[in-house]
Amino acid sequence: MLSQIAFWGAVELGLVFAFVAVGVFLAFRVLDFPDLTVDGSFPLGAAVTAVLITSGVNAWLAAAVAMLAGGGAGLVTAFLNVRFRILNLLASILTMIALFSVNLRVMGKPNVALINADTMLSPFFGLGLREVYVRPLFVGVLVILAVVFVWRFLESDAGLAMRATGANPRMARAQGVDTRWQIYLGLALSNALVALGGALFAQTNGFADVTSGVGTIVVGLAAVIIGETLFGARGILLALIGCVVGSILYRVAIQVALSTDVLGLKASDLNLVTAVLVAVALVLPRLRRGGATS
Amino acid sequence: MINLKNIHVTFGRGTPLQKEALKGVELTIEEGSFVTVIGSNGAGKSTLLGVLAGDVLPTEGQVTIGTADVTRKPTAARAGLVARVFQDPLTGSCGALSIEENLALAARRGERRGLAAALGLQRRALFRDRIAELNLGLENRMKDRMDLLSGGQRQAVSLVMATLAGSEVLLLDEHTAALDPGMAEFIMKLTQRVVSERKLTTLMVTHSMRQALDFGHRTIMLHGGEIVLDVSGDNRKDLQVEDLIAMFRKMRGETLDDDALLIG
Image (cartoon, rainbow over all chains, first blue to last red; front, side):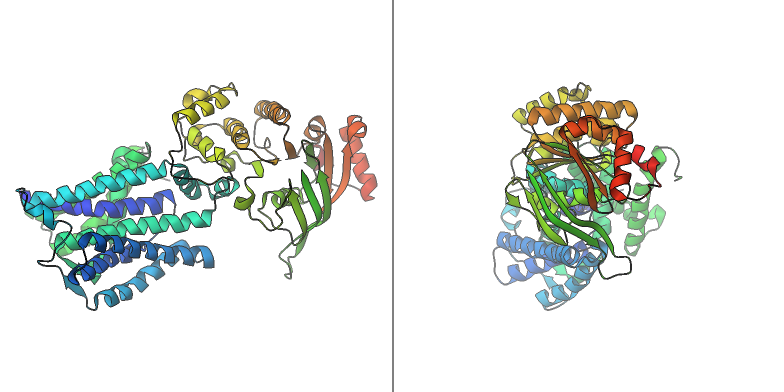
């Protein structure tokens, strides 16, 4: 019911959004900071990468700059929240809205095509493996690197400080953790990862579009929640793997839903399907525990 | 050593709700001394502790801990000098982290935190030994999440956490108030042992006059933001709870209408 190409395409997209999921996990779960900046930092990463690559900059360097830009966006949200005490959700919405304009400025137009440009993936296309496998394989390797990095970080002394900041800020301060600095660091890291996802999205799909960020947060959250539903709360590494698996499952489920004629769904129903999936993922664990009351 | 010089704390200054929580408190606590603090609700006990911990910055006056002037330093910046156990067992540790992760966090109190793994073999062994000393069997549950522990167990672990990294002072904020009598007694014995073994300069706020007289070397009583009683040595040895109340009345020159609060 799902063609090979459609399946691997979904896996590839799931892996690209795994960066978003890990970023969302850092902000929402580790720092307990509902950060909607990602809806802006994802297309920002795509925009920066696309513009730099089309003007001849090396694709790896372009992705690195995209991460810096995303990290910067996270810092803005953190600044609004920490320095001016704007409610975290609102601070991130402000940055997100501002980024829409910024992204248009960066690109100079609503979208930039990357057809025939040299991307991070280009060197791997001529090695004999079919393109449809090369792309998920390449992104998958980067995802593994990112997961290992974030895992080691969260289990380091510095990472413990960040986890304590989200879980119990009063205790964290009593232990000498500057919780303001942790919010800056955490949001910068989170949005840098999301922007890397955007950078890879632009390179695997061959374009950057200013509207591609809409709903990024919901997709990321969906992946995090699906992962938690599957793996439960059993340590950082499993939570991170859950983010990745959740992201892939989400994309495959969407692909199946859209390509099954029985349901009569169209591509334009994507957001509705997403919302239903997230709602189901949220309700399932509660049902399992017995009763949706309270 | 702790030195408080002319500490004033005013909340909501310039508003109709203005409240002077501390009015010129002068207090010197020598190194290694164990001081208990009593007083009724609103007397300024929590504010005093907050001023030492950094949660409350004084409106006027000077705070010295050890040799450092920390008057304007927020909590995190002075955490290397101050170890603390909170009244609410949920406040002092991180429920979402494991026992050993909480200990790792506390072991770096006031220090720079790097990217090295928080839990190496050596540290795990050290933490396990320290937790085993509690005789609560928790050494076999080091990877359990903290929120699986009872309130008393969490306070016991909090006490271990308070002593993992060096500090100038130990602040105990009614740390047995939320526990059942048996557990409260266990925690007080543990406190006694830890304080005397490590010769910690300790300030313990308590709701119970009995506890205030039974533990430590010196007792101070706060009322209306001022120190109204300060006893130590032989004077303190002969003191009974009833005497405390009588002395309190005499010093204040007013009748006490909330005896119940003080006897507690």
